[in-house]
Amino acid sequence: MNRTSLLLVIAVAMFAAPALALIETYDFSDPELEVRYQSLTQELRCPKCQNQNIADSNAPISQDLRKLLHQQLEAGESDDEILDHMVARYGEFVRYRPSFGGVSIILWLAPALLLLAAFGVLLLTLRSKSRATTAGVASLSAEEQARLASLLNKVERDS
Image (cartoon, rainbow, N blue to C red):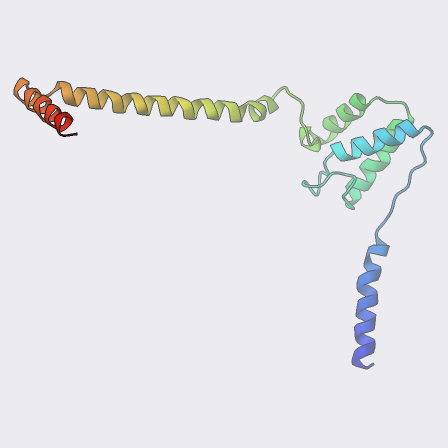
């Protein structure tokens, strides 16, 4: 096999690989179900891939979840019932936007709590520096305070 033929075979294999990907199609009894299906597949995270939703993942678990989702939609379950079922089976991690409750409250409130803590530390730091400056002037003797006042007056007159 010559070099040109080998390169041609490699190029065909590279461009044919996406054609091997599985494309699932589901028939829905109502167009509204298909819209809900698309929305829910974007909302649910693949338990294996972790950073992909089940719409974009080709993992077998995502294929199973899409099939289950189709079945549940056709059975007449609401979005909340479907999400509750998925969370009960795979944990809160399966949702890209976890609900506000339980342990996830910590995740939702952590940024605000950290910001408040940083603000508190800043206030304490500024207050302690202010006290140190005030305490430094107050600890001067009467003679040192008079000398300091005369130096400040001299600076004001010169400027």
